[in-house]
Amino acid sequence: MKLSIVVALGSLLLVPAAKSFAQDITDPQIAAIVVTANQVDVEAGKLAKSKGSNKEIKAFAEQMITDHTGVNKQAGELVAKLKVKPEENATSKGIKDGGDKNLANLKGLSGAAFDKAYIDHEVAYHQTVLDAVDKVLIPGAKNEELKALLVKVRPAFEAHLAHAKMVQGSLGTM
Image (cartoon, rainbow, N blue to C red; front, side, top):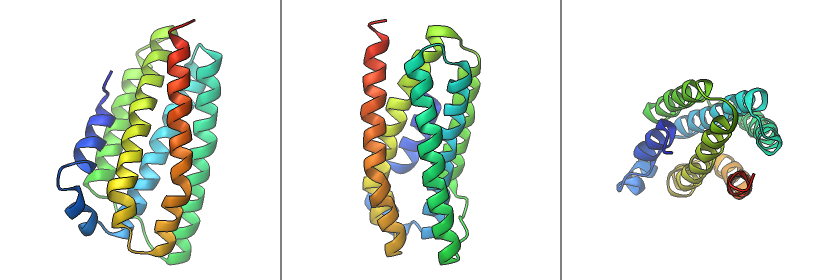
């Protein structure tokens, strides 16, 4: 199931002109995108932790809450150090709107349907975020410390994607 957050993030970040967008994106805009993307996943994780019916879903949700809260803490410390104020932009707004739509969709589900929708979204979301990090955020970052943070947290997004795919696969066998 392709949820609106994937469409919103994908259409805003992975357009054919991604190279020119990466050149035009500013560090404050990148900061807002990173913080918003992490917060969206924290909120979905909180809902899945409380509403999920599968222990693997709940464990994955807990990991998303912990890891993405940690990334936002690091990003917050860096932007404070650099005296950069995250600048809301069309992409960060699209991510937030997509996250809100995803939460609304998930709130209407329960049991196995909730678990499947949540993990399907997490697989698609983490793939889209990885593509955005690689094609837009890292190439577009001007500040070397910001770029270094993006490079540093990228393996966590890869691990999340692999874990989400594993959980997704296991749901079909339960």
